[in-house]
Image (cartoon, rainbow, N blue to C red):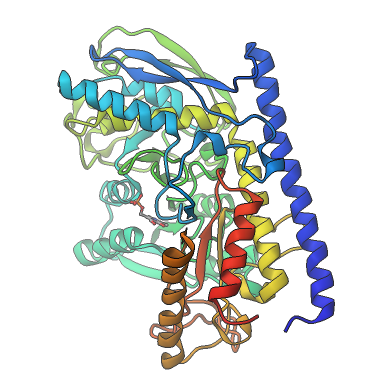
Length: 537
Ligand SMILES: Cc1ncc(COP(=O)(O)O)c(C=O)c1O
């Protein structure tokens, strides 16, 4: 049973988060109205064109479509972005952390593009330079350093395999990497004799950014060459202090590699400011591009000032073909270290124009032009990824992030109200979320004793909890048409917060993804269902 004081305190905090969410939604609506006024659109809604590449290989505009809402949706319990998406029937899809869903206009264009290319097949289509010119500013980077990869896994592997690690080199990573990151560092150990040092990430009230920084610092030795961490962390949703970690790495002459599977599309990223050397992200998760799309960012300069750079529009410009140019503003770099040696691991044109030849770095080189050419690509997929990025840029990445975070904070306030804030993966603050919780991923554990995220479990309790949690996920899917997932988490221990659960004693919290197409009504619906499928609070 809930105590009366907790209900009162909780209701205040739920109301506060609802107010904040209303404000975030009305900012979205105001931005839309300004946009429509600026471009003279009528009440038909925000119209967007998409960038495409015609059958002749030249960049071209593909059709326009209604993408936004009518500005009234949030009041009626719909997301201000909901009109752009279409889910089947009553489905409430809350597993964007695994993969997203594309806006309707992107699906239509992808279909049309695929049909066209099947009618008139095109090998080695070009146009990616224009796509990269279009996408890069939205992530705070230069088109020379942004590659459209196949996914996060691809980006991480292309990163670690391109760095000339030596036997005995050490890499600091964490106990909460996803399989892609685990595999990437494990092969470094098995194949090249790299020594791995693992930081245990803290959860719930054991978490603080300072604690995370201290745990990384404790693993530093004279042999450390690189750090590899994910943020947001897929198990807990924690947004680690990315910039502080990357700049700490830079100060210690370490290479920083970020698994940013969950960054693009959820967060307004400024990769130059973050200071990472490598960032691998997904296009198909929060960015809502097609399956098997992603982004690989490789820092290619160290200029601290904001600048405008001239970039070509032709893919062949780096190899001497004349090209028009466009002016692209790029932010200054917080990491001013020299560029680390890096070899391309997958390209058709190794050595062309000397770019990345022998791993040598030159800030004037269009490294992405070499890294992008990995054989025949999928024009429809790359066009579609570009189009989702254009939509996000037009809608405003900061507004999207604000909305996603306000919605997640509302979900957390409702969870804290019912199960208590000790049930959440991260510290819950009444009002604005703590920076670590500025994410759309919410992990909470209603199954542990006292619904305590950090509760100690023995092996039997851990196995029973996994079964119970998996059953709840299945019931939500089968009986409620709600899709969430659970994870196996090495959480911090209540008995000793300096330690994390040992293998065999992990917990199985639920993970709920709330994205731009969700509304407070969707949050209420999942919470109502959770009350029915989980143990009483
Ligand atoms: C943190 C993290 N890294 C990597 C991946 C793999 O992503 P992708 O399917 O884009 O390769 C995931 C997938 O869930 C993830 O959560």
